Image (cartoon, rainbow, N blue to C red):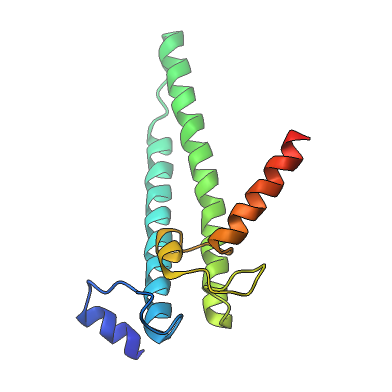
Length: 142
């Protein structure tokens, strides 16, 4: 709770490599970042749902109808991707609670503050992610 107060007092706080890795302050920072991200996604989803419910226009022109259907399909695909993202955010929140947040799932090494700040749902260090992508590319090329 102390970290939440510190963050409220210093909204410009950014975690750095100079402080204790995944100490109380950093964990609270990432927890808030994840919660805010999730809320933004949920708000956008509600807006999309509302928009899709209100836009039930029947376009007499085939081109307009096709364009409208394409837009609708794109919005639904985007929301599906975001639904999967919410699942990853929830997984990150569970890792914060169990103490494994910020550590690479493959090596157990710290992921790094800069990477987590850019991608707070990251589960692999940059090196492990690159290795994973190289393996994936090799399998895809075979």
